[in-house]
Length: 161
Image (cartoon, rainbow, N blue to C red; front, side, top):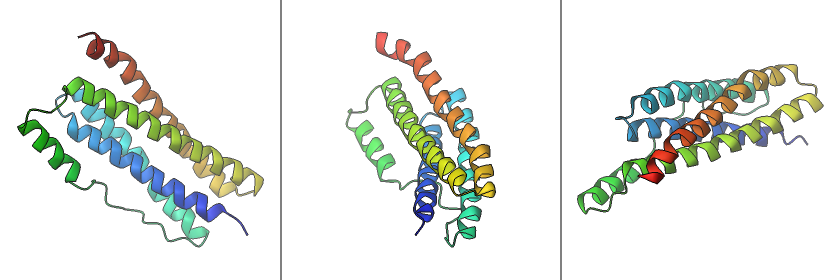
């Protein structure tokens, strides 16, 4: 029996998580206009990937949500507010570095999932699935490269200050 539905479900979950992380990053760093706007723009890519995976999943007997809830639970935001009130909020630059590191790791994991799906699509001779991989995977790589580039630009300023 094919394990393709498992791979599709995991990739759908991972892309949903990546979109949520990008939107959360954008919300947490509104003061940095580049981070705010670019993170929102590239989050839309993951949202589109999720919709495409839902369609492809349907072709393979899966019911994947094409429009999951994009915002995270509010508990972490509440924890940050409480931390700020008691004077334990880390420096914003360090928070941004931590968020970008987490984003980079998440995007790298999603990229690996796309690789796995692409290899399976080739082996199983699934041209429609391969087309989705070829359309979506490059955008995930760009998300990962963007996070990496931001880390390289921001880290010297934050760490040396």
